[in-house]
Image 1 (tube, helix red, strand yellow):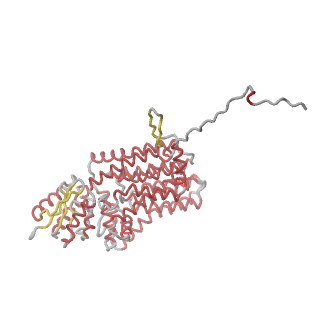
Image 2: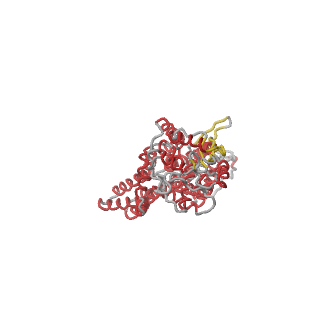
Image 3: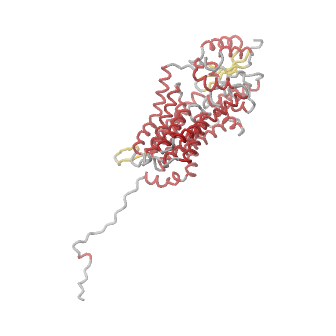
Length: 530
């Protein structure tokens, strides 16, 4: 066979010169995502990461005994429970007994209790963030879900949650209940698994209610969601009614158990008055202050709220039941905050968890973020990182502002060091830090050691006694030391303030004045012979 003559490639009319082309640079965001993927996808590593973030975000307040006045009182009550005091009977408050049991358990860890409760609260915050990240995987990829957990931790500092406020603890139980509910919603059918997970969810809500009763509203939503899911998936009416009875019983069990204990020892009336009636009798701070507080909450929540709205449109394919459940959880949490009024900043803490879950899809979206333009080109900061940076900056400013306003450990410890060696009877803190009872080891001069309960106007009809009469009884015992303030709270009961001002001027002399945050506290000592 005749062979054709050889021809080099260079002789081909179709020859094109080959050139090596450098690959396009991989965006830095993709490199970071690849490097951190193992942390976002491995549950153990994610849990460790969230714990480190929680410690770093909250360490500025570690050891500070006056992070928040509520924390001071919870620790005091928990400590005195270990010495036989009974909440609502020996120490009055309207918070559920479960919260005080947590603090009593913390006191078993030893030490002064301050650092211990703050570390335990940090573990709770990290655990809640982990559960949030697991729930968010239904709506987002691993990075968006992990970012939701991190943002939750950072956002706590926006609303005074850097210490041991009750939602820092009860958010974990509610988030666990939401996780169980999500598992029910995303699986077909209902059956025994749905009933059992529903039972666990409602029991978790019941435990949360014994930390703070506002969990009731999220629990009501979860209960209705269980009924809807069961009905939609073919559970018969009779079976569904039986399940509903069991779910309601599980949710009420912790509260009924606490009530039953108090009734058994003859203190059922004290339990009912403190837990259920007092909140109805508490006064308002006035429309102007209420609106101002609500506006502040809305302003601080705006970044997370916007992220949640954007996340709704970006969520990965998830069952419609799952999507409705998680959005309904957020709405129920918002309703629980709005219906109670008052609107202190920490009242917004329960909203952070469900909003972070819904925002996770936006946090993890590859195209979402903050774009910075310059002559050298465009630089994009992913939405999750941008949100973390923004919230970190704001929360650090607010935490520092809290320290300046509420004070720092050495300031209060100076008062305690002055009082402790000279104390022969019960100290009385009329307007000041309840931590002083704990720091000095003082006995309690009243069932109402939280100063605001006796001194504030809004509490005058809610505490189950006449506050002025109780103040007169305390002062009739002639306590050696009384703590007051150079700048009284504007909401102080005018009659109580007038009585104390006159009595202190007549029978007491200022022994020590210490600046505590934005105010100065005065330690008054009884005049000889007075």
